[in-house]
Length: 97
Image (cartoon, rainbow, N blue to C red; front, side, top):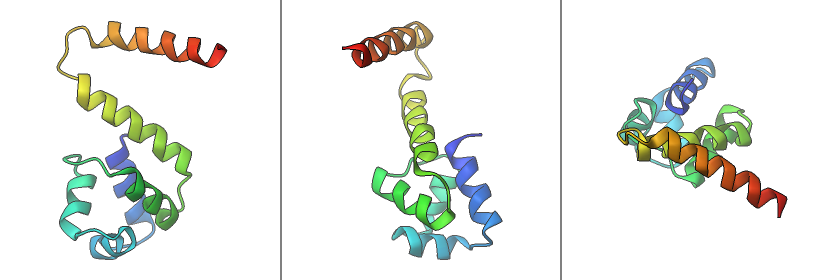
């Protein structure tokens, strides 16, 4: 499930209208629509507000948020998988230091 799908699903599960969600996140309703339809990624601050409003673990949302940002950045690159493997190695190596 993508970040957008999870946010929309959970908002509907909580029985919140988009305008109610917009109020809780402190953005326009149009931004909620763009986020839920995958046209925009929320900021970290907005993500925290989503977590609180929708009773979702922030770490789960943060993980999906990071993955979405990475995907958007490299999705068109033919060598994306090779590059991501290198990133994983560097992150693991950094944790060992």
